[in-house]
Amino acid sequence: MPDKTPRNCDALAKVPEATILRLPVYLNRLKALRARGVVQISSRELAEPMNIKAGQMRHDFHYFGNFSRPGRPYEVEVLIKRLSEIMCLGNSTPYVIAGAGLLGQAIANYSRFEDDGFNLRGIFDINPRILGMTVHDLPIRHMEEMPAFLSSEGIHIGAIAVPPSAAQDICDQMVAGGVRGIWNFALVDLSAPEGVVVQDEFLSVGLMALNYKVKAGMRE
Amino acid sequence: MPDKTPRNCDALAKVPEATILRLPVYLNRLKALRARGVVQISSRELAEPMNIKAGQMRHDFHYFGNFSRPGRPYEVEVLIKRLSEIMCLGNSTPYVIAGAGLLGQAIANYSRFEDDGFNLRGIFDINPRILGMTVHDLPIRHMEEMPAFLSSEGIHIGAIAVPPSAAQDICDQMVAGGVRGIWNFALVDLSAPEGVVVQDEFLSVGLMALNYKVKAGMRE
DNA sequence: TAGATTGTTAATCGATTAACAATC
DNA sequence: TAGATTGTTAATCGATTAACAATC
Image 1 (cartoon, rainbow over the protein chains, first blue to last red):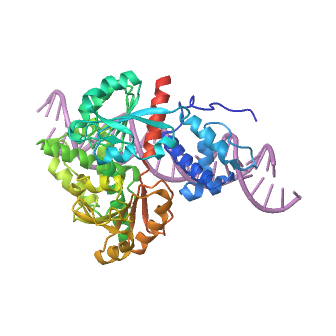
Image 2 (cartoon, helix red, strand yellow):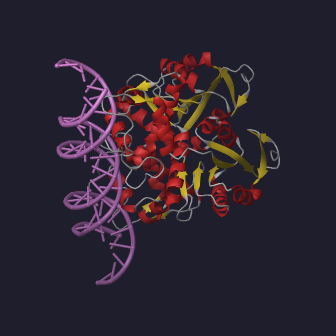
Image 3 (cartoon, protein in one colour):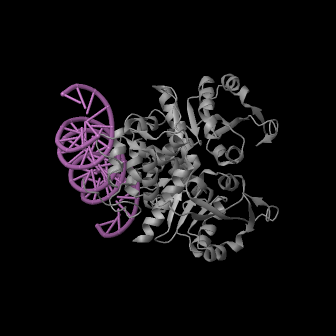
């Protein structure tokens, strides 16, 4: 069985968006299983607790070559390694947070991101009362320092956790500092130049969708 | 032009999941426009800043009848009203938060949810050092009180912002208290009985997907 | 009228599911 | 062998896009 392209981060092209969004879910689950001491697992045992069909998961894997051999279960460790490569989580990825309010601090202290290969390098705000205070072992710096900081540290990912009214300005500053990916928690549609990825994390969308499904379900 | 079904919350059935997830995005945008004093707007002006095609948005609207008349632009106020009805955001919806850490507090203080018709009624934790402290004008109560509180207040929606190891237990308690929709921030796959909706809000999925898109894009 | 807009259907595109050969 | 599993393709299903009639 000849090994198919693509092994790792060289993938892309025809990999569906929907698959890309499921890979992190698989990875999370696999890490939880590894922590419980699970070494081998079948596609059914892996997929079904996530409410995903085993065949769909195998189909997703198939975009990236072979993860096992027919008849043999998956090795948890192998899957974690392969999926981490595919998701480009190999070397530590530095990022910053703009906004040191409760949400910014919650993100900063969410240690799980570090297990996944992300490394918080700076957190910024404009509130003089909290400047210099420490969050997750980092001093809160003034927002004015951010663009130069981003350039000198070579950081390409930034999270925006500021009020909507300030978000576009912060976005522009991040882009000026060389950021290529913006994780946006502010409830505004940011405009960013071609080549900069904006990933919206609109929490109220999830809450509204949940509410809809609950109320729709209660009528049936 | 006879008015089509369904006017409001009676929709469902054949409305695609993808459409349901876009309605809150439209609603957010419309509220921002209203705040800026915009009264009328065309589908193009409304959709394109959200990176959504005007035709797709009209197609989405079409599941719920007519929002304007051919040749006439949309009235911002009318759209907000109609979309709010469709999303069942009419009367205030009570909810609770389990976990009063940074993330739980961030959710509690995210005032936007109130504009959207949600009403935080309780926040629970087990850490004795923070019990009784006030978050968003509510005392932090002990988790043991939660099921009875949920029943007596008739609350159907709960957010889980506790460590993954505690999440399934909290989920079970919420279900016991009558919750029908769980907004899950803990990185575990919860199992809940038929009829209970679990909406996962796995932040690390968004960060990993962003990282992938950035690194994939940088190679091209 | 001429240009622009919404409502609506048909055509295209993409994602999921089903099925099964190859393998253990 | 018999039963179970992965890899892989084809068939189905659902969502997006294109196109245009009706209307202003």
